[in-house]
Image (cartoon, rainbow, N blue to C red; front, side, top):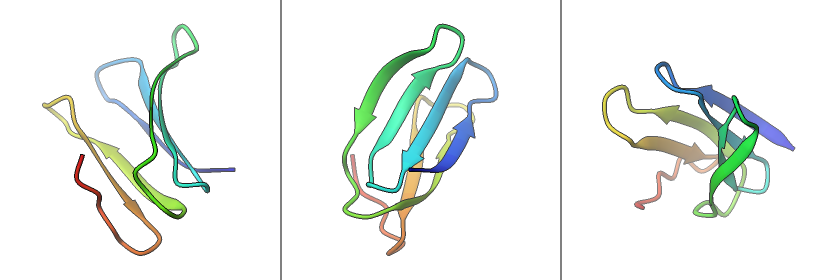
Length: 68
């Protein structure tokens, strides 16, 4: 189940966080999954792209922000 979506402000990328703890990076223009991150043990409650760097931050239900 999808919990959060985050759209990049300057590209065609979307972060989709799932109840399972997985975060998926998608390109919405061509509909392809670019990468997948399994860093959380529980539901992800927030994801956000950095404005200038190729980074994002995420937090789960326990407010844990994993180091990647």
